[in-house]
Image (cartoon, rainbow, N blue to C red; front, side, top):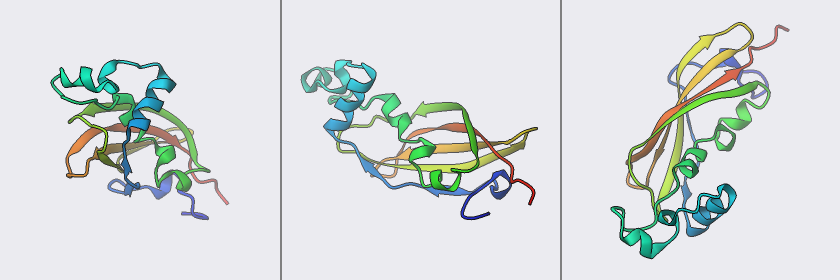
Length: 150
């Protein structure tokens, strides 16, 4: 590691990065709905949500996905000089998330592949709730620069 920055060569499979927890509020649901235009009543209408299998307003899936953004993680300041591109993501929603749930994002290096101009870093991402249940899991793939020769 050079000057506090990670380059592709600095990562190893099994490296883990945990980020601070966030407790979701009504405001998060409403702001996300306003930003995206996803105004399905399942996300904000208490009476409507009572008639669904969930019984109360449910978090937007893409809101949850955004909580796994590397740019908002503890990994972000370590790769400011080396990140080239965010290439791909997959997500699976394992359990519902509601107002008042506290979620903890985690990123774990699960694969490293050398490419011609930059390395391919694959991270397993998870969100767990206050009870320890995994509510989201998936993968992110990033191109990360190699360290320049001195």
